[in-house]
Length: 325
Figure 1 (cartoon, rainbow, N blue to C red):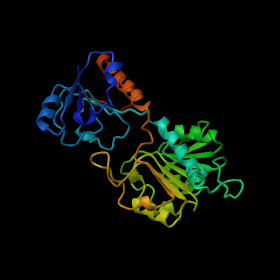
Figure 2 (cartoon, helix red, strand yellow):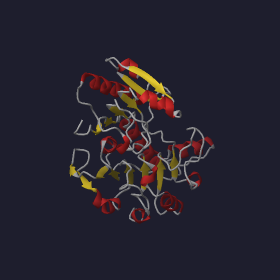
Figure 3 (tube, rainbow, N blue to C red):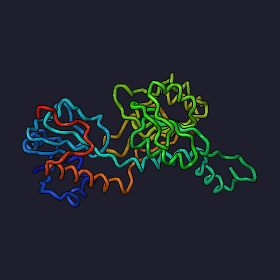
């Protein structure tokens, strides 16, 4: 069987798959910028590993699996994926992202970088000798918007710090020991007013674009701190910038952005100057990018290839094979 990887994805991230796969697969690389080459190589591909499937993708008549090497599906045109193919994704980033969230909240609350910079200048800022005092996470209220894998891992760690943890999700349900209950999304307006910290961990789609807008920001405490580790477009860019600039909320940690550099290296992440605000923590979409991430993901991708080869049910199915197939 043949699995096809686009040249753009052949950057080392998937290099461990041959070590983990146990069934017989040929791995082929296609230059996605050459449509003739891509089209020819898709003709006999049983599986494709890619985060992207555009509407004008060449025909893939033998395709049985579109395996995403990540979690997000916002670059997949599902109607263009052959009906006989399942679409699956992988996660495994929830551990690193949850640790990032706690780190961002701790940095905001304690301010170790600020104290470190001050004492290097000989200033005893934040000491018991002269103050000011810093806060604690203990007893603070955290609202998690989107209670999937990431939300669950964040809640687990936040509860260990003694935080009160609330969650909203499109699938409300009973508590799990880390949150008392998972509330429906229509309760978000009410829940936001209780939050000291807000973490966005919900997928981006038409219903969640600009989920946090000027109206909802107005419902937050003046000290509220937002952490976005999901997708930039969940928060209205200008509304967040103005709220932070005018200090109508405490601030924000932004890891997922509104613009990304074509070369992946150099480029402004926003249309507005967040970089000028001292109450915004900025990171380059790296919250889940840990040493352990790719080995975990490659192992799961290899297991799905093995399952496909053996005719076994696939895991992490986002869209199953159409009934007629």
